Image (tube, rainbow, N blue to C red):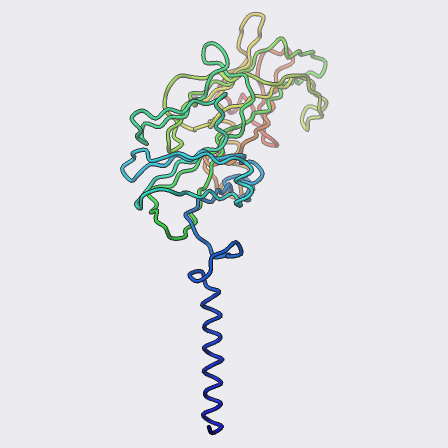
Length: 333
C-alpha cells in the first residue's frame, strides 16, 4: 500500500470514529440520568410586570394552579405545583398527558381555599371564576391577603416535542399604608376613634383576569396604630396609620377609600383611589410612560398620607410618596 492510499485510509478511519462518537453522544442514541438533552412541554413563570422591570417570580411566587382548556374553551385538566417543585424545576411547570392539539392555559399563584373560591360552570373557560371569600358580614374582608398572581396563554400547540412557553404574571394583590395626620401637631388622634375602609367591586375575576361585576367588598385594616414623623411642609406631625389589603384596582371601577368617625359615623372624606392615587402614581414614571392602569398593576404597595385640618374635620392635603395634591385645587371630597 503506497503512502497516499495509507494516509487516505487513516483519515477516513479517524472521520468515521468521530462520527460514531458524536452519534453515540446525541440525544437519539443515549438516554440515561446524565443526558442533558431537553425534552417535554414546559410553562415558564415570569414576573417582570413591576415598577423595577426585574424578574421577581422566585422571590414572590410560592405555588401554581394551572387550569388547561382546549381551543374551544372546554376544560381539559388542572394541575397544582408546590413551592419545592417550582424551585427544583427553575420555576418551570411540565405539562404531560394531553392529546396533541391547541390549548389555553390559565395560571394562578396564591389560591388558598381559605381566601378564594374557584367555580367553572359547565367546564367552560368563559365561565371560570375566582372569587374572594369575605371574612365577615356584608361582604367585609379584614384578613391578610397572600400574594395572588395571574397568567394566561392563548391557544398554544401541545405535542411531544420540546418547548418552553413563558407565562407573564400580573400581581392582583395590593397593600395600602394609609397615614392620617393633623397639620396641628398638638392635636391628639387615636386609631380606635376612626374607621378607614376601602370599597371596591373587585372580588371576582374571570380566566383572563378581568373583573366580573358582583357586589362591593369592604376591605378593613388588618393593622392600625399611631404615627409621628417630620413632614417637609408641616414639620412634626402626629396621627394614626392603617394597613389595608385589597385585590386588583381597575381604573373604570369606583374604588373608594373613606375615613369616618366611629362616634357619630360622620365621614371626613370619601375619595376615588383610581382617580387620584393612580393618576399621581404615573408621575413617578419616566416621561409618563405608564398609563394609570399599568401603574396600578405594576405597583403593589402604596403609601398615602392624608392631612386633616387643625380641627380634624376636613381633608386639606393628600400625598403619595413625594407628590402632594391640595383639596382646594384638585380633590373632590
